[in-house]
Structure formats: structure tokens, C-alpha cells
Length: 199
Image (cartoon, rainbow, N blue to C red; front, side, top):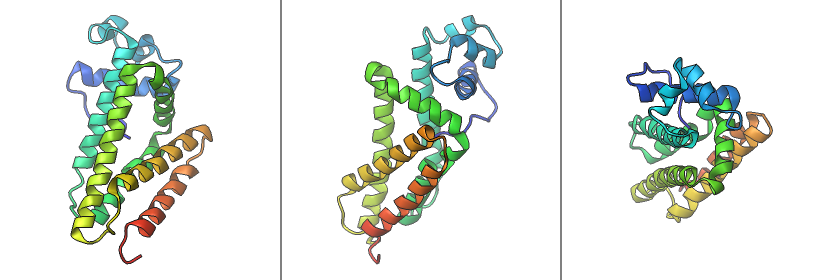
């Protein structure tokens, strides 16, 4: 999950993405309109439509924006130690979202539209594949380094994603941060039981 866009805006698209983030947090997906995004942007709806023809076009671009920001935060992790890298990645997936509950709600609403919206479906599929790739790669590196047991890395990455997705859904539906904390602990227990060689 991306952090709240707080860096100075350098171009209109960046400003629109920040405005979209703010409007989604305030109003949720169902009540989101171009007008409400424009209000956050501080300009007219025409200024939004100059860049994006429809709300769905804008939200598809917003999903790309979030994925790019998430990738940026992952690339900032400098450690190559597989155990530490996996730990930090799970923090990004399960600890950081606690500070962005409104965005979690909006993203769940957008996920619910994915079966009916190919653009949304493509972005969520891309996001899922990218995160599973990161998990699978660090697990494979740990196996190669001899710190992780020789497991099916693809299966383990899918299992960890199931923990993440379930926790995020429960956090929204129950309006409670505890599922994220529980999932983070569960992910650690799973990693210890399945991956760590001396467990």
C-alpha cells in the first residue's frame, strides 16, 4: 500500500493523483465524483477532464500511481539479507496500511468493481503478480543462500498473500486495526514454521 502522497507536486498529474487520494479518503469510492476530486485539486472539473476523460480512466491511472509508489518504497529497502528483506516486505504489506485506513476502504470498494471493470481488474492483477513476484524472489534467494528451507516458493508466496488480503478485508469490514496486527504475527509464525531452517 502506498504512503499518503505528501511530497511536493511537480506536475498536474501528480497534483491530480494527490487530490484523488484525498477525495477517496474523505468520500470513499461510491461517493467519489470528478467534482470532489476537482475540489481537492483546487481547480475546475474541466482541468481534470483535460487529462482524464472519465472517472474510471482517472481511477485506473490512480491505481497505476499507487503501484508505482509501492514499488518505489520496496526499492528503497537496501538489505539483501533474505530474512530481513522478507520481514520488511511483510511490514510494508501489513503494518504500513494501518495509517491509511480510509484508503484501505476505498481500495476494497474498487476491488469489488474489478469483476465488472477490466481496467481495474488488470491493475489489481498486475499488483498481485508484482507482490507475489517480490515474495517469491526473496524466498528463492533465501533457499539459495541456505537460510530458508527448500520449499515451493510460489506456494508460500501465495499463502502469504492470502494472509495479507484476508487481513486487509477484515480490517475494513470490521473497522478495526487488530486484523492487521494479528496477520503480521501470523505471517511471522508461518515464515518460522515453513521457511526458517532451524525452526
